Length: 261
Ligand SMILES: [Zn+2]
Image (cartoon, rainbow, N blue to C red; front, side, top):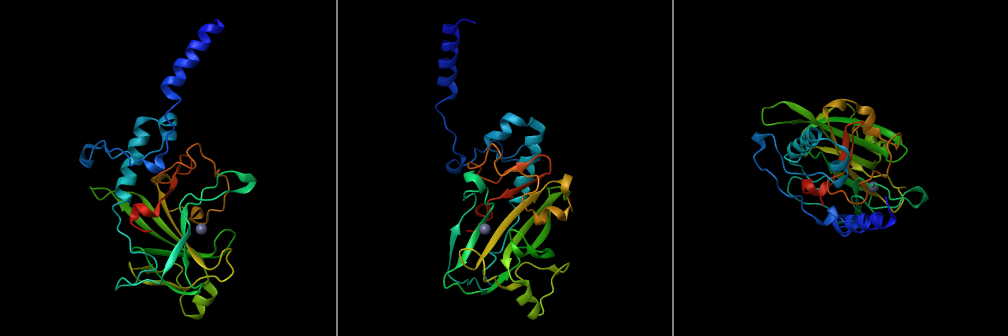
């Protein structure tokens, strides 16, 4: 191909594709279909998935996110009469710079209690089974709660997991809270103590994960510490819902999409 032809092609290509920088943080996903009985769902996916995955995969993920978002949460530090300590979100969903200056996925929000108090009552966001872990590398102590996600025909299509990180299970144990394996109802107290030594001061790292059927019940992932998952997926920095790892079948949800902010 002659150089002049190549040049024309490049100009043509950049005219079509070059100017529209997609920032999905600022774009509400377009509603394609609202009727979930049709098998088509609101489109939640980032541009990465349009280039790398087929139609049926995208439909499956959109269906999953649709039903996951129907799960109503209680705010993790709001009590039954809707009171909560004053707090600020010092690190939001997707913020942060990782090792080597790469964009790092902070797949959570950090709720800092304004006076730096470690005595903070935290509540189950929904019903489910508790899994507690001590001294995890990223989270210090944390607990997770798992709930099934059902479609309109009551089929289990995956699980939703909330993670309450940087808590102090030693102090919780002194308080006779031995929660591992217990079933809790939404609004039950799951912890009364934040860890005091967290960088930036005591805060609740609140994280929401969605699990597709390929990983249902695999609790190893609840303690994710980096492992084989890369921080810099092609969609990193511009996701509006979290990102999916197609190999492991889980993704992170923005707490805002469950009215937690
Ligand atoms: Zn955090």
